[in-house]
Image (cartoon, rainbow, N blue to C red; front, side):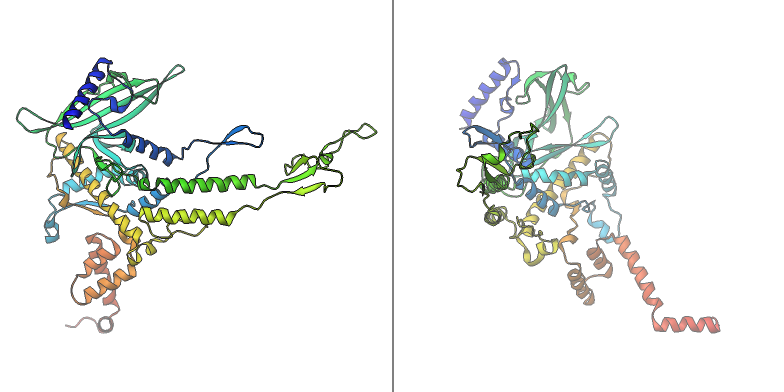
Length: 518
């Protein structure tokens, strides 16, 4: 099997060279070999996430072919939005520290923590991650890589699932990959599409040490559907180096995040699945039902047949303009020839099957919840409010357990990005401290929104009563405040308690009346 693949790659490479480096699709590149079904799946996910569906064709009453928009419930976006909001919020705290801090000693990673805090704040990382988690869950993944700009600041470059392609992977993740970015340029009446492919690969130097190589290739096309012919980087990226070699990295600069779970659709692929990828049929059933419901509402307007004599108008004997019987803006009445003895007005309006459609959609939503491992009642089409955060966490709720699986993936993603940022900064001389490991990086997702604070206070209060935990630690865990703030609160509490203590009040009164004892 490997021999056959090598032969295929040789043919690809030869075709790539002989054609003058023209790529019709991303898979035409000799280094890239992604299953076309995976590319098609990601493209489908993106279209559905955007709500981009083909028009519906139908034959009208006159036998003519007509088209109309397909009305949908964008549940791929809605479900991703719900889950991203449960997984991450901007109150998340990211810290870099070691165990020495708990012993009262100075944190040896203090400089790393301060540097990361500056980089994340400069890039609005929490806000951006909160925004990018939605398409990550919907499409199947995102990638981000740090880079150093001309002013010496570390910036982040984000890529959705349709702009990242793995080159090499193992059970620990993707070690080599390609990030794609497209820039448009208008020349007269033409629109030119420039596609930049950024390859991240590992090689060995002459000493046998790992060397991280970033290669940039630029392609130009007049069609958005193809990559195009390779051109010089200077056409739009003046001064950009074609190849950059970096030493001293322990991991890839890019960090790839995908939803939790195994890719059962393509087990050999390292790419992730969107949370609705195993529910495509259910999504179609929901959308088809909603589309039919909407069309029945549109076609269900009141229709009344009247005899043609009531709509035909003739001038009167005086020659004055004819008067219409019905308001000209009304479209309820339709003319039809009726006999002289027939009722001149006949209402043919049919009742809209609202209850049946709502029941059908809600039944499909229950199936969708089961397939996505979400709790019953997460979605509804009858106006009921969604579950609150307290309801989500109570009784080991299924949605909460699913959320925790995704939280682990996001946590590992953030830790990897922290290490990548610090290693890149050290290479460029922007950071001179020690590089932490994952064990030294803490990510607090602020789970207070999912926890009953009263229950927490009762639990830790009992632990404090039996001497199992210090008061300062209780304040920290229940109210999510730093240690310094907790200590300050405790001092104020002790002063307030001292102020209302009867013995203390009596002593202060005696001192006020008789003065200090000699």
